[in-house]
Amino acid sequence: MKHRIAPGALVLVVLLALPALLQAIGAGYYVSTAGRIAVFAIAATSLNLVLGYGGMVSFGHAAFVGLGAYATGVMISEGSTGAAANLAMTIALSAFAALVVGAISLRTRGVYFIMITLAFGQMLYYLANSIKGYGGDEGLNIRARTSLFGLDLKDAATFYYVALAVLAATLWALAAFVRSRFGRAVVATRDDEERAEALGFPTYRYRLAVFVAAGAVAGIAGALSVNQQGYVSPALLHWTQSGTLMVMVILGGVASIWGGVLGAAVLVVLQDTLAAYTTYWEFWTGWVLLAVVLFARQGLAGALGRAWKR
Amino acid sequence: MEALSAGAPLLDVRRLSKRFGGIVASAGVDLQVNEGEVHALIGPNGAGKTTLVAQLAGQLRPDSGRIIFAGSDITRLAPHERARRGLARSFQITRLFRSCNVLGNVALAVQAASGSALRREAILARAAEMLAEIGLEGRGDASIEALSHGEQRALEVGLAVAGRPRLVLLDEPMAGMGHDESRRMEALIERLRQRTTLLIIEHDVDAVFRLADRVSVLVSGSVIASGAPATVRRDSAVIEAYLGEE
Image 1 (cartoon, rainbow over the protein chains, first blue to last red):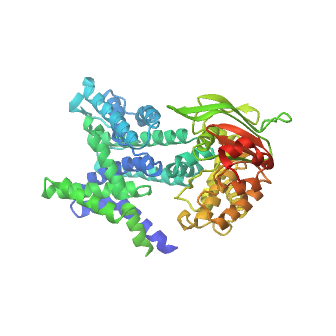
Image 2 (image 1 turned 90 degrees about the horizontal axis):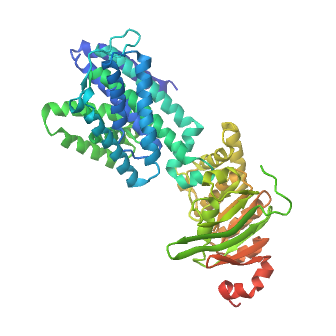
């Protein structure tokens, strides 16, 4: 048993000591990269809930991240920085949008579902572009931050720890979902929806509940993002962002608890590293994605799991 | 559960009609299934058997007509609502949950029917009982891919029965089976008749005449005869339309 606990504990220690470690080796700049990875990991994990466990290939997930960012960004720019108020508005807005989008999109299947979620995502993207009062297509800058227990979220290390705590809570909730009777029914619906419904599961309602919950978590990732960057722009809602989140999930491992985290970490590090050498970094990340899809069907999480069992 | 008035059938299908463009799949189907019986529905290919099952289970909406189950009108209910009222079905093409093992599949069926009434241990205990009943004891940990065709068919039926329904629609339970597998399925159906009412849609006419208390014959979207196997076998309309001269 002790062999099982050791690597998990090691990872935890490394994650907690990361800002200090990076400072020690003179790479303090990367603390904010670590924070960005944590935010992406939360967003990708929420997409993995929809895509991996729910079997719903949503191509508009970034819209909920963006809405969450705008909800918090607009509140802060209007002088309301209370954490509870910011969080409540973020969740309310992104969950409501997910409810409307999901209620309509979930009446379709397959490629139609992909297209309709993409269309809704782009509608929200153009909506964000048209809000002139809050930056329009130039985006919205905020000077203040959400006030959370008196913490200074402008400090990279502080922000990193807050994002890490939210990520941990997200992963814990996902693991609890997978073990729950609701989670089992949702995965069964992914396997065979008609059979699940014939057995007595209200599949439409279950899928919608998952879609809304994932939208709310994506919104929280957005609220964190605007607090880290001090900035939110319509680009955050663009369909290419939805594509990036999808790449993270596939890279990390579809329907794997750690898939979103691994995918976010690898893709962000890959992008930042390659971008230093070439402007065509997307070309090279494309090869990495291709290799993972071809040779590690369950993504990096699956490959790591197999290596660990050996 | 609603009480049935004495003598009323458990399932009462009245003038059920369904058309797809110019094709009439159900042309006013009348069908009564009594509580406790094994009722077989036979008919030639294209008679509308599959369409009828889909309408009874709720996957398809009829154009007109009514479906009364256990005394209440279920014509407009969604499939999951019918299942929760005790109307279960199996599928002609095996539909199982590939990301769970055999026991997990049956546990899902038990869970779906019981809602949040049962704890996990109770669900698994009931699922294990069900596995023994369908002859898959000891196979609970196996993956779906590891099962033989016959075992998959038994599990397909097991999922339909696991929720303790009042009526089970078995859609061609012997589809694609060899002689030995068919005999095993027949034995399974003989065991299941002790606990529930069965409506069996089947091609294998010999097996049907051995198993059924009553037989209904569907031809061109309507029931042309319904009664005891011996009576139906001698019915001139049935012989002409389906069974042929022997």
